[in-house]
Image (tube, rainbow, N blue to C red; front, side, top):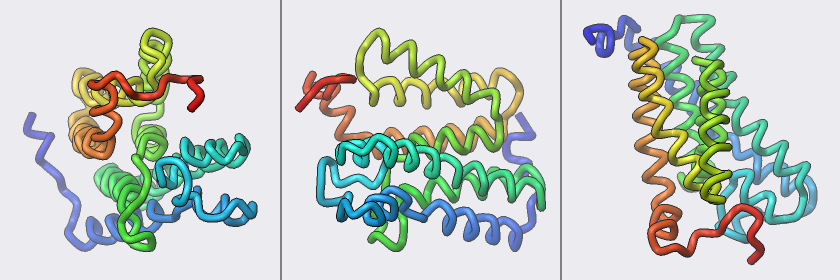
Length: 205
């Protein structure tokens, strides 16, 4: 328990990791890719989100897949680079900052994505085996409920708990904070789930 709040990182390195991670995470790949493909501003269609789910609404699955991959890998890269040069704590801070940069990019008036891909990318960087846990939970809930948003919400809820029980308290703490933020960003999805109006996987319209 004492390890949870016993962070040894210096303030200058922590700040550098924050800035680096945020700037990397704030790159709006969904917007960049759709504009490059001549599909206009992704924010003008569907949910107005810059993430892969909204990119998929353009009908271009390859662009949606590329967006998903790049949104994930920017958090992975931030975490791995920070960890490699300055240790675990710098990696966790940089990865977290990349997640925040994706959700609140300064270039887009702090209106970004919902962060599921970036959440997974962070896991890939700091606890790669947990990506399999996330995937198994997501697939299980999706099969039972047919709700993509519910699957992601449940998976993000379970991940910090598993990390805590396998004795990774610092990673668990950061992922728990990311889970709370992700749930806040999914507020409208949660409201639709409660109301029974959330779109199911494969549902048209």
